[in-house]
Amino acid sequence: MGRQVTDEFSLAEFELAVQMRKRIMGLVKPKVVPLTERGKPEPGRDCNQLRAALEDADAAERRQAVRAIAQCPDAARALVSRLKREQDTATLEVILTTLVRLNDPLAASGLVDCLRSEDASLRNEVIETFRQMGDEATPVLRSLLADPDPDIRIFAVNILDSARHAEVESWLVDVIQRDTHVNVCATAVDLLCEVGTEAANDPLARLKARFPSEPYIQFAADLALKRIREV
Picture 1: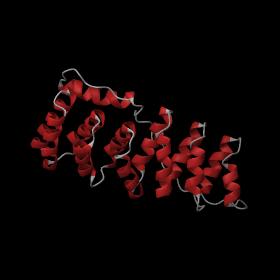
Picture 2 (picture 1 turned 135 degrees about the vertical axis):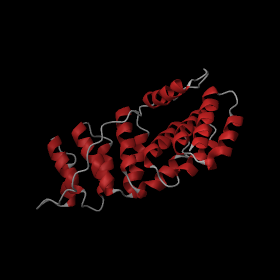
Picture 3 (picture 1 turned 45 degrees about the horizontal axis):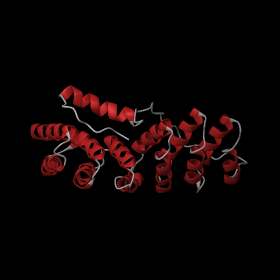
Picture 4 (picture 1 turned 120 degrees about the vertical axis):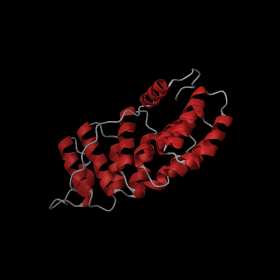
């Protein structure tokens, strides 16, 4: 996935290329559903009954169960399992916002499998969910930057686009120094254009030397270096 860049780029073309890469990979940002209050346990319905209700044929019943099951100890596992099979858009959004509120490592780990889905819409929703999650998702995101699949590594960099974690720059520098895939490095440089400091100068210069025949890398790295100097 992703394209090799062979043409010369103007600044306007660079900005357009960044957006187009995200669109090509199914990374168009979906509408964010506002977080609602955590569901309360329903009188007379225990966790086993709520898990069963997640499989109800009625989408409204499933949504009610999603909101209520947040109080159960295995809520994340049950919700991620349902997420992979849910076809109703409204229910899907409730599942994702509930996983954000849970914000636990199991929820984050379960969402990783959905990033590997062929369904671009589901990937979009999961990427947006990761962007809303807190520190519990950090170890998972860090591991995704070393995933064997370059597309997953690109997704991880794009999640960092909004995360603005304190270590984002150091993670991106690590990517451009060790990753062998040109499109992963290009995506990281795109973000370094926004968050890079002087600490990225030498790694960016080495990246240019590593990909001397890639015009996009050359242009993007030069732009990042220029913006760092201007800060």
